[in-house]
Length: 93
Image: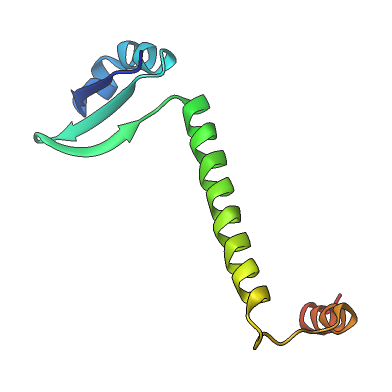
């Protein structure tokens, strides 16, 4: 079961091995500086899952926008040949 631990920033230097073990167990560690939360450490696998989740969320949001635009009767369409031509000119490809 994932837990969240709060540790002072000096523990990164003085007790890194202990913090590393916490992260290996998929726990989160909040790092404080002068008693105030400053950053969060997470396991690299959890970070990769978070990045994947955020990417999927972004793609879903952009797809929803595209579907909404496609359904709008005022949307102007461009032939794909024109798009390729414009891209070639813009990026000198």
